[in-house]
Image (cartoon, rainbow, N blue to C red; front, side):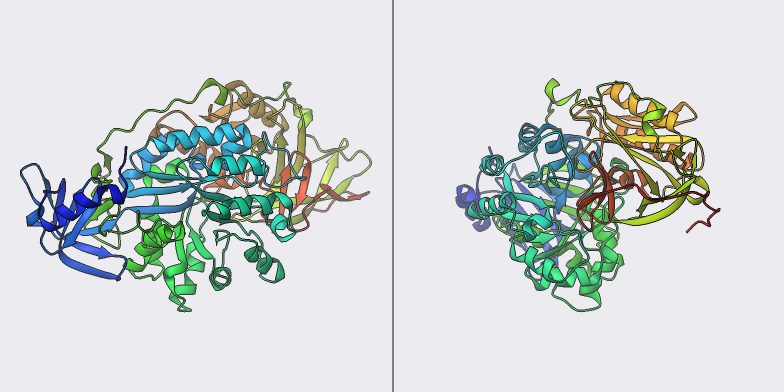
Length: 607
């Protein structure tokens, strides 16, 4: 069992004075000091009991016969990187496999919100991921999901968490606070559930995560800040970041696989001169392919530096700032006495190649390869077999009928590349034999949400624009934030039915079908959200998925991530749920067909 700082303090003092040899000494490095903002050459680091005991010009007094000595050879000594807000399930792998993928990239601490599995399995799903996290050799802190379902009255999830459930989970070891409070209208309206959950978190002395997905920075935003959330990652502009910091919140700037929000928001620091101490870097959602090929928090730090941040400032935002935010400054986020000995060794602060990774004083990775074993964690049978359709679906289930019209004006979900918000569009579409048609020439195809938790057989249909599919095809996924029903997007109803039935057959995943042929499949048997295979295996399958979507005409960056958010009824403007098409600006269900026409629509130019 890991010892606390105070339990280890006598040993750390003895190492610092030379009365006891260190377990590990790293010699001759350039100390990236996130407290002073300096880079200090010629520094030695001594470690004992998994914690830093000494950081100074000469640790030879701490070297004994059994001390492991590593020569940094002038390379930089950087605190282990921290992801302040993320969802493991977005990587399509388990906590263990996610850790296996990111440790070689220098991530040694993660703050995870398992609200994806909570929407499928409830509190027992949160407990499974919590227990898995507790067994890992890096620091994985868990937030209690706050909004399950995320938008009561607008969707039905597979489970529900009550304030009593939240209070129970907050007492588990390793819990760090309340997950992102997505029901921002509930906070603003003093909804009793939101008030109770935030109060319970505050009473426990833990941190309340925020999620204010609205461009309105007026009274609604001020009310949300007054309600208790301590951070927010939904900003997309410099004004968003400025507003949050001015209200005493931490602005979390995210660079995920599909959310590219750092470049604009970091201008609050680089151009407007705001104090960077209240800015934190995070990923939110990272696809397995991104993790395997491009990196994790090292990717975010590199990107932030490329936007004009000083390297040390970017590193502070990915280490110390996050630790301070969660009240863990005395444990994480710096190379300083008493803190857990999490650090990376790198030869360049700008490109940030990660050459050595240590967690709690143990070598975890070398030159991009894992150097330590991680414990195996097996998910029980009760976490599998969660896709329940109740019946086999046919092509007719995906029809939208308008029997008395020659054409309609339809409300269409508009995908915004590299951002979570969507646009509320309207398009004129033809009607043939009483069925509203798609318009591939103008990038309008069908979207359906298939209920998969209670075997109701329910299908809600609508239209979406932005994917660019130009051949008969369908893409289906049981990852559908946040209620995680099944989303099917396609141009051909027969392929849409095949895709939905295929995912029912395998117990969850993602599939691409074109012209009746299966082009790509990612199996996700754990809650229909996660694979039990290695991250690199999942990444290879995801690559085939991306290629198949591209073959169908889709050119969006990380289009699958955009697909998975189309049911997220807490982010404007237009979404789909098991209750219908949802206008998120007004938080109410709306009709797909805005207007019917007696005449056929004229050919329209693509927007």
